[in-house]
Image (cartoon, rainbow over all chains, first blue to last red; front, top):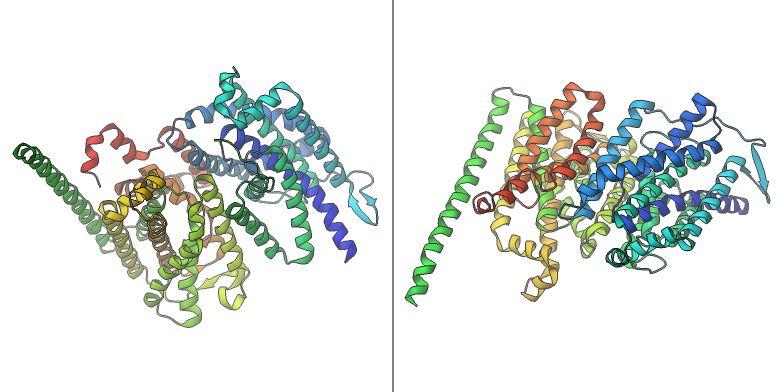
Length: 293
Length: 327
């Protein structure tokens, strides 16, 4: 039992790291653009499929797929921003309409992936040597450890970017007060495009990590990750990057430990229950940090 | 005094004539629609297509009460539909109810579920949408994991040889007319006006003496009742219920898309939207079955970007004076 719990803790930390990245990119989008990205899971799974294609056709190792995914998805996000977002702002209620539009995008992307890869689950047959490592008394697959290392590096880089560089500070300022930052002379349009591209890029990279951490993925896995992303983002407080990181890890731990003690279906219900409970009782998230309107 | 009376009289007359046109128009449209649907089985037209057309008109119109009238976006709307479907299926299959006696209980189940979800009505905007989505998932998971003797587990329930396509078609038509009548009444009633006032500014409505909580709840229960009935009738029509299809997110998506396509907040909007989109969907489905989902997704994006107020909504914005005549 102790071993099982320890196993749950270690895997929870690893899985939680991935959830934290999903939440972080999702919360950036909401904070800066007021867009609720229902298609985020599809962006993520798109990254997984990119890694799959790179490995199966070019033999490129998943770690090398990381930069490719980052650049591809960043560029795609930049483009998508200018196609989709400026027009959206003209509707009566852009926030709710963004939810609907992104739902449409999610359907379209899932359909494209379905056409390209069929409905079967895919996985990358890449093995690290050694295939697993001993962490204390338990064994963890090397792929998961590598993924965790990458997660930490990316989170650290993002934290540095958001808190120590001028564009990062401008991003956080936009989240806090979109009107005021325009008075200071920041080009919000450009910054928003950058935020969208950045979030998409992180999503793509997260997808590669998912291919390492989870055994398989398919064209319809996206919705699942979108929902997990929502739970994490709401727990951390909408638009709060630090909150999303912490909430992601907490949710990952809770989920993995719940599977130790509860049947899997019940564990899922607990996840949704946490979401509903948080919004009803403490809508500002665990850190109690409110986004200004 | 007299001057005032003279000025008011023509305005009152004008209002009366506008009302007459409004109701005449509603009656003509309602009459035409009824006659058309009544004749579908008589002339042997495509029964399934028209059944689902009526189902989507009902779903989109009821959704309109929650969104267009009350300002909520329940992205887990399918919960009511799914629970309605399972209520009828369980009552018929496990307790031996006749289908027609079971259907009202589907509606009641929808209302009960609406009451259970009522605490979420104090949320707004995106929080409400996300919570609604999560609640629908919880409903699906609970029903999937109930003992197999009750809900049939992941295999679902079969209603046996009780399918009566033509009868269920007419029952669906009755429910559709009931829904449209309710919404037509609502749009002119005190409750409908209060709902709109609360949607636009809850505090101001409260100041004017509107019981915000109660008004919201009534609107919400109307919106919960009809999809549950639709679920029950569809279960009867297809003879089978399982959690994957009864709680399919696509059902919510289609409801929202059809309602938005026509225009939220008008009585005719969701009808026009459902007719247009169901027809388009059928056309695409027949021509390109493989890319149906892709086209539905792209259509949604295009709709939000180019026609966010929907067909009727855009028309009324161009011609605001028509607002008095068009239901």
